[in-house]
Amino acid sequence: MSTNERQLIDQFCDGLWLEEGLSQNTLDSYRRDLVQFQRWLETHHPNTSLNEVAQHHITAWFSYLFLIKHSSARSSARALSSLRRYFRRAVRDGQIVSDPTLNVDSPKLPRSLPKTLSEAQVESLLEAPDVNTPLGLRDRAMLELLYASGLRVSELISLTLARISFDAGVVRVNGKGGKERLVPIGMEANRWCQQYVHESRPQLLQQRPHETLFINHRQEPMTRQGFWYLIKQYAKKAGIMTPLSPHTLRHAFATHLVNHGADLRVVQLLLGHADISTTQIYTHVARERLKQLHQQHHPRG
Image (tube, rainbow, N blue to C red; front, side, top):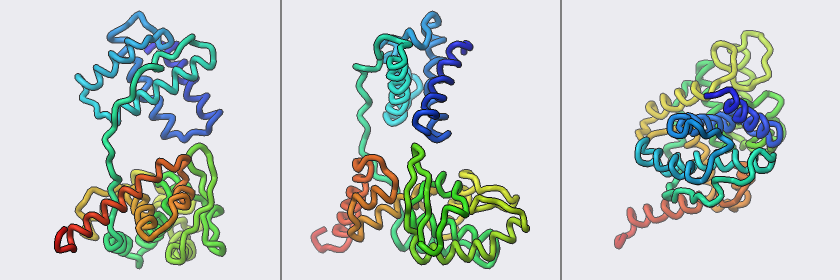
């Protein structure tokens, strides 16, 4: 990739970070899509720079993704979203005259319901850690807090001690786009987190000061990968055979709230969704669960 093209992508990502405060994970996703498109452009249209792209280049790119790379509709839609974001910004900044993605249709995405857990499965998962050890107590506190609050994993592992109020029973979360929200954590999660802070955390830190709430055995903040590994291990121990990720507990949090009659707007606020349409998926999850229960227990099901 030429220096000029790399600079254009860097400027785009830096601009998003400065103006919108997007997370590093989101910026990395935009960067990957743009770099992938630019490399395809260099191979198939070597005389065309990023800011000289026309609509036919975009459609050819997606034909390549679909026919050669066998990309899913969801991956292609995400890539198109990245290109749209880039070219709209380029038009705004006067780098190009028109947006080549303007008349390109997004791939139709199949409606997929998020994978979730039953309440009994969640109970088994929460009880899997050995709370008689410092690491097990930490893990129980993390799982309890994740399920009680519906936090994203990135929000959980970046929590500082100052952002949790045991007296008020809330955590102050920095979400996507730098938006802050207050989330209640409930009595059980509050109790386990307090026990972790008073008993386990000092042992893990060995008297060293640290602002991050959840610490690993090296006195460093817990990582996404580290917590993902723990979730899978505890799922296996709890006898949960379905594929599981930390995000599954966020889905369980929302689904169980809706199942018990929580207002969708409240769930939206708790999850930190910018748009209610993102939250509405959980009403579909609840309906599917009702259908399954009807089929299972009704004599005419």
